[in-house]
Image (cartoon, rainbow, N blue to C red; front, side, top):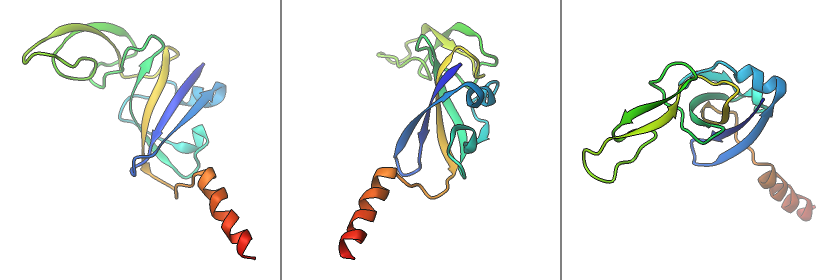
Length: 133
């Protein structure tokens, strides 16, 4: 079992983490809208909220569809369909709101961040300090 977890910070920055095996098992069964501790994916001090995702075939997850099944729904403008004409509706296949083994990507946002530190920025900040010495 393997997931790609996309973490979006409030300042617009995003990072992508690959989660495998035991870390992935801890996300199994969570639903869209639920919060979890960032330590499960290697981001200590963060609290993350699941905002969506997609399955292995690219079908989007919908918050209002319980379970992990994949169904065809008649959709107007919403998750999974953007109409071209006003009032247009179309049947589209979507995935339920529960994370299972068929999910490939999980989108999250940071609710309670620890101070965001990009490792590349950290190295560039240390270099000028060493040059001054």
